[in-house]
Each structure stands twice: as structure tokens, then as C-alpha cells.
Length: 112
Length: 487
Image (cartoon, rainbow over all chains, first blue to last red; front, side, top):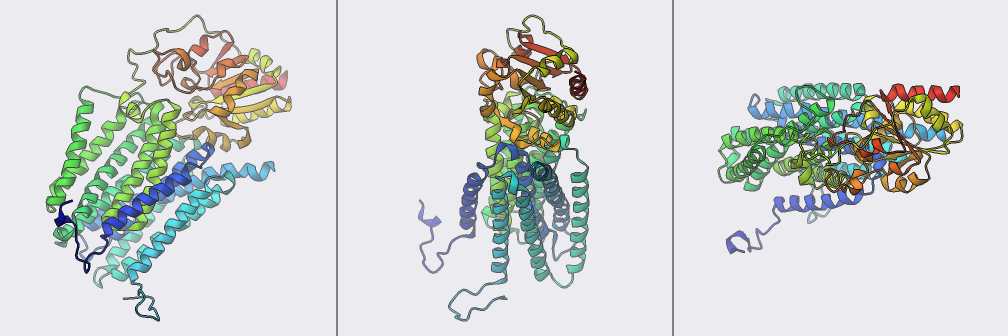
């Protein structure tokens, strides 16, 4: 490794937020694999639409973007548009998943 | 500014940002726990609710954070826009969710996926534009800029790819259901992909090259179209789950852009789930992912099975079939996309109730790629109120066909083709199939002798123990039920 890339000064040698992000990213993928491989095939469609709804978390990013001190900038416009799309993703995703799961559970009460 | 002050001031003092991040972590825990509850039918609905609460927490804490960071002058204007955007999104999203029929679920999920993707693209571009306008772009670290490029690329591919998948699944006339492939398509895809990646790295060194970002965005939108347009309708379960994975990865990339752990954790979870489902679907078709993406099976090309139709198919009337069914002791129903198209799931349920009254054991054999998304048949049968104990997957049900009197195939084609077991020249050779041909009698309900999505004729239809019943699945099932009642 070239030495100029590595900071050896103990005073400023703190963890780069980017490295922390990568650690979180990798660990979360492992958690995802562990949990999702246990979902039975019966529930694969709700799993997909449910995880699809979760991917609407990008709404958080959209909200952060849609605010700006310089109103009228392109950033606010794009952010606001992102909020619309992400909200459709979140609201639609969760409601559709619930509709599906309701059908799976209704027989639960009926048959037993 | 700090919320909590420690009594011992050498301990960490939480900043507002720390608190916000801890709340994001709580939201992520809700998502993980919610997904965990999805592993059982009994707890799944609660899991979905918990996950939704997590999302609400994440959204509300973000609004508070914006509120706190807002400048005096602009707060109200921006906030109004946010409120309007949230309301529009909620109305459109809930309307779509309420109106979509259960048979339309695959295209609905594809569409919503696409919206998630475009949102990530817009977040990345929006963040770039905001920093550019405020002359902060040169201060951004190279990795944040790289994440902007990648989020744009993946988000764009997810968006147009999902729209094409939606159009194919919905049966819109603009996009043919069959794969569209032209000479040089793979080359163009390669050039666009490598070019976009190159530009994504280029802007890490030249932060102000905003035109490069626009080129990435446009290239990604074209890439999504080209990638999915070449894939046939039968491969859509793979495509939809792959795009699902992309939408998660795009969200995670947007998280890298904003340095937001909530987005990174959640995006990775979705990315992982999509890849697992993609893998399951590929295995069920005995094909590699690359083969699905670039193989274009079902193009009606000349590589169809060399054997061709063998002999004559025997046609049965519902009257004849009902007599055989009445005498059976075990019947296995094999539903396919044809059942979904005919909306026959309720009729099937009534029919099997009639069989059960005659002490005939009824089971359902579900192939992993039956339908247009993973688990699609399970959802349709659940809608009709079929107890999920009666649903069996490939490995469970295959040994049972030998002891089964009647296998009733409803609009399923390629997943029952015995050629997959022995015809090495067949495009579906090696694909795990349902061994319906081993049942004593097989009835196939189908509208015509037309081949399925793999574009090959099904050997099953010409076997001695097979009877074809031509017509709309729903009408045939209903007349079968009537015949049973009358007999």
C-alpha cells in the first residue's frame, strides 16, 4: 500500500464515515441473507412486495433533498419529485402486501 | 446543540445528529424484525405492520431533522412542497394498492419497484444539484460523488427496466411479450454500461462535470429498456426479483450519498432478498442468471425441440373428464399462468370442494416459476381461500404423482413438459418439472395447442394417458363442477 493513502498520525487517525458505511452495508447484507432464506415459498410474493415497500426508505433521502435554503433550485425540484415517487412506493407497497397477507390469514380464523 | 447532557462530561454527549441516527437504527430494527415475522404465515401480517411503523418513524424523524435545520426564510415554502408531495404520493399509492386485482400483482410490484428506483436516481441527482448550486460540490469526498454516479445508474436501470416489465406483464401492446432482440443489442448494452461506470469514476476526479451525470442518467434509462426488452414473459419472475434487488441497492447507494445508515441497512436488506429470490427462480428453471438476461428463450427461434409433435392429442369433453374425476381417490391440481389469466382461482376452489365432498384427496402442486412472480400462485389460491396446507411445492409433490389418479393441469405448460427430463436438445432440458405424466390420468385445460413461453410443444399432450380439454379455464372448471354435481 502506498503510504500517502494511509494516515498514521494518531491525532487525526479517525474512522472515515465511508468505511463505517461499508461495514454497515456488508453486515446488513448478511442479516438479510440469514432472515430471508427462512421465508417459505408460500410467502415469496408478499416478501417481495414487502421488501419492495421497504426499499421506499429512499423517501428519507428524498425528504432530506427536497429541503433547501435556496428555494427554486433544481435540487429541491428533483427532491420533491423523488418524495412523490418514494411515497407511492412506500404506501402502495405496504398496502398491497397487507392485502395479500390478509388473504393468507383469513382462513386461519375460518378453518380452525 | 445537544439533547442529552451526560452527568460525567467525559462521556459522550449526544448531538442531535447522533439522536437522529439512533432513531434511524430503531427503524432499521423494525424492518429486520418485520422481515423475520414474514417467515411464518401466522405472523406475517403483523410483521408487515411493524415494518410500516419503522418506515413511519424514519419519515417523521427526518421531517423533524429538516425542521431543525431549516433556515428562517425558506422553511415554509419547502415544507409546503414536501406536504403536497407526500399527499400526492399517498393518494396515488393507496389508489393503486386498492384497485389492483390479485392477478395483477406481478405488474403492480414491478411498477412500485420502478418508482423506488427513480426516487433513488432523483435523490442522487438532487443532492448533486443542491451541492452544485451552493458551491459545495468541490468539498464533497470522492466516494460520495461515486455513490451519486452509481445510485443514478442503478436507479435509472431499475426505473425503465421495471416499466418494461410492467408493460410486458400487463400485456400492453406497445411492448411485445416475446423477447425483442436485435443485432448489436449486447454490444450497445456493454458500451452503455462500461461508459456509465467510466463516467461515474470520472466525476469523482472532476466534481463539476455535471454533464457527465446527465449522460449517466440518460444511459441508465436506455440500459433498463434494452436489458428487459430482450427477455420473454416467462422469465419475468427472475426479472422482477432482480429489479427488486436493484431498487434496494439503489437505495443503499443513495444512503452512501447522504451518509445515512438507515438507507444503507434497509437497501442492503432488500438487495439481499431480491438476489435470494432471483437465485431460487433461476434454479427452478435450471438456468444461470446470465442465460436469463441474455439468452432470450422463447423468441420463437429455430432451436425448438427436434422431435416436434408426436402423434395426435386426444380431446376430452368436460362430461367425460368428470366421470374419471368422480372415480378418483386422489387428484392433484397443477395451476399455471393460464389459471391466473382466466381468473379461475375461485372456480377451482369450488370445484375442489365438490371433490372433497366425494372423499377425494385434493392437493395443489406449485412450481416455483408458475405465474409471473415468485409465489404468485400461492397468492391467487390464498385469495380464493384454499387452505395453504393443501399447497405443496415441487420436491414435496413429485413423489406423489405415481399414486395419483388424476393430475389436472390448469393453464400450466412448460413446467410440466417431460422433455425437460430426457430431451437434451430442448431449451428447457434440465429444468426441474412437475412429474404430472406419472399420474394415471392427466387432464390438461388449455385454450389451444399453442406452445407456451419456451416456444416448444409439450410432449405431455401427446401421451397416452393425457386428455386435452380445450377452452377458457374458468368455464371448463365451472362445467366440471356442474357435471360432478349432476352425476
